[in-house]
Amino acid sequence: MANITFINEKQGLKQEVIAANGANLREQAMQNQVDLYTLKGKLTNCGGYGQCGTCVVEVLSGAAGLSERTETENRKLKKKPDNYRLACQTVVNSGDVTVRVKP
Ligand code: FES
Image (tube, rainbow, N blue to C red; front, side, top):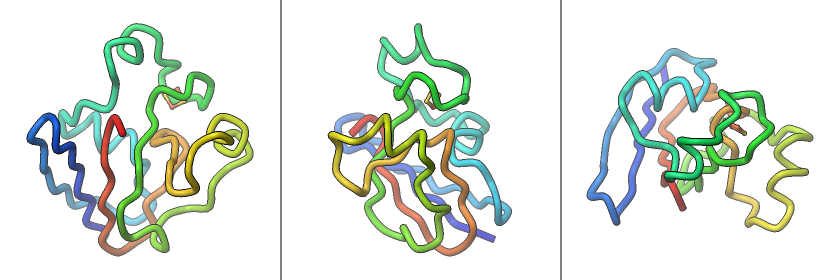
């Protein structure tokens, strides 16, 4: 099992989710009503196919429990810090993970 904590200080969000190992980070957010997208992302997101870059999150802790960055992420996030991920491309393998949404 993995514990995922979604936070966003500006929105006063702190939500903990327990997920099975191998869970997709975007799906976990959506299933638990965590708002991943800005307005632009809500209108234009690609539905989880790694094309739009709007599902970006900042990994604050627990990166070792996540899948490696994909080529798609490396391309989309090349100007972002290394701890930024696309939630739709990120698999939570195990452990406690904390991510900031809409960084
Ligand atoms: S939802 Fe489009 S890149 Fe993740």
